[in-house]
Length: 628
Image 1: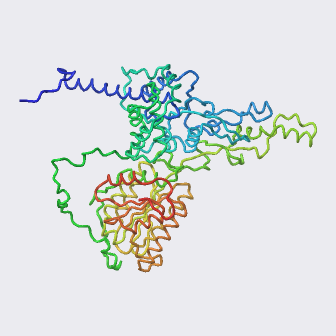
Image 2: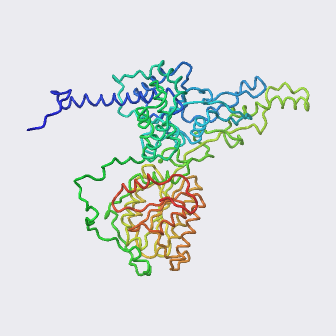
């Protein structure tokens, strides 16, 4: 007998029409989930909300729903992209100070939003300084005002709604802010048409009542243990995130009129706070083995892959005995590095202040003559652009004192309305983008040629294409025999770079120190010209030619380590791509001396590179350690 077909509500309808009806239903379910998260945020805005959605009608409906749900007196203030510190924190009210003859404080966005919600537009473009001030307000409920001769502390008990419009994986709000935003919500695929708030949680009266009950809701030991265990299972190491999840569970319980979060409240918090941040997924029991599986899996023979060659095969050979390989087909082996490797690694090796935005951006020049205005500083208006308002603000607090001094020294001059001195002059501070210059230092020695120089060439070609898309400058250094040669000075021409790479011969010794120093010279010259250099060193790390030109591995390795430390001392970002058949300790040691990222060139697995990039630690590396 045949199995009975499950009954369906759309029996008799064509398959394509059934799909058309089910897709909107999925979209409506997503939107209802969004409304539930919105209600939790409305009850306790201090939890924070990161809303991933492009500007459009769906996002606007969500914002309108939130505005309608908030009790009377709870404001929603929009914080524009690129807001200045003065506008964010507040400072001297120029007109009021001049009129009163004493410093008068003007409220900024954060202090004006006290007790309400700040909407951070285009949060993926937010700078670290602005994110730090928001984080301070979320942590302490106050902000310090230390500017224009004013030293004060103002209340800023706010909730933050970050509008994340990033399209690429590296376009995200700063980490300092994301960690403090508990609810992560995406509107991708959500459809507000026909979706209703079935439980009435977003009704203004419900939100007001839940707010009044929130202080009496207390999680019990079971709730705390459940949230902490879930955070550990998802690989979340931050202690702040489970605390935010507990706050979300309490807000959900307050909405339902409960004094203690139930299992459903905890599930809602885990789904909306912990799950979007999951690094690993917990293993379900029974996934790894079934009753039908044989017990002798460990005894199965491994695949008949040829054993890797001995990494020390060429260590004792004289460099001159290795025949040069003048022609290596770049297309002989497909490069296994992902196309966006350079952007990801460049973002990892930059200091945190330079990683606030997309990995495609260059570093910022703080003393640029052009670019976005990021503040003011004392200066000479003949060299930089005068900021009239900032100058008047600096002069205003001193007017009474200066009038008194002037009246004593020069009678009859006290009627002057304003006195500005050279110490009051303020000029604009600009932040301009700089170009990125990538210097490739390629090991073309015999040991590298015996390994995988063809794959290395292919990998460089992939990275060159990525540089061309971003309009980065590139340079090429090759080292072999007893010296390093600059094959290509900085250029934006992809054709010239590929031609120089294809003509790169191989063979001879490994003058690693000479190659690193040649790359350092190019990087230092690039930095002097205002660009941000990055050294990409492709080598197996087995140096055997010292700086003097003499053969000998111990001295050659010592020279290479000294050269690497010189690169690190100059603050130049670097990465090492190991060309060995198996990851070598020598290449790791060079990466550690450089203070850069270490990456082994995989056999044919680009996913391994992506995983290595995702797992690599961010930010500066302590002396004596390497990123691997």
